[in-house]
Image (cartoon, rainbow, N blue to C red; front, side, top):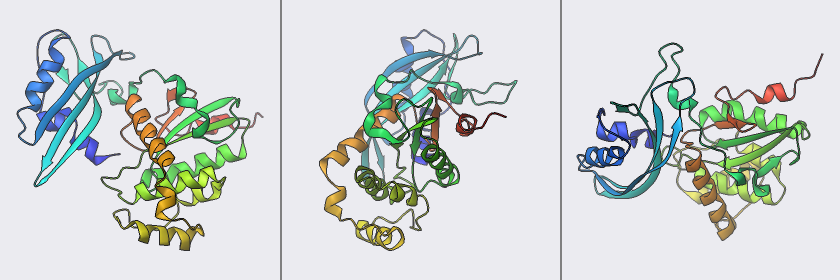
Length: 281
């Protein structure tokens, strides 16, 4: 999960929230709270969607889109991200837990799947008309991704008629700077049909905090046997593809990795794919 996005949540920046009022007060309240933090300058704040919460009465989930400048020391960064606020008639909070199940309500919220989510250029493995579709947001240096994603890739590769796997990059560069270079290598390899290189990026031994691109590419050459240049991985089409991936993650409120959607629904277990390839007895 992205620690940067966690630290940028409305709750962490603004503190505990509680208010009485209608829908029109939400943005006003958010701006008022955020403005109390001297490190934050608000460029824009708006409500993108209002979603029902399955099984939870009296509460709605507001998708709030934020564009801020965040200053830490001498560095100022412009950051755009989405957050979820849970709103009832009298209260607002960024964390809500189902007391019966202990489940974080945030994991139950899912915006509508965009029509272009199953785009051809994101199809990594499988046939477009496969029985089941999986959408995966991942970072090759995320420890949790390394534990589960290789098995998902293998299943999709071996069962192309059962699973169509659509892969989206979400490099968590704040905590894994080296991921930015690796995902660019993966994009180039995929275009060249080198799916083996894509999978090898989940096993490559590289310091996640390494920022020297040339050193990272040397490691890729040594461990994966794939030689590429900085110029090759900084082509315009790769920049545009990664930007589309980031925009898609925002639309679906994906802030951590790995995030898996199986047949249009968020799979918090990340193991639904196993039922797609089980042989009937």
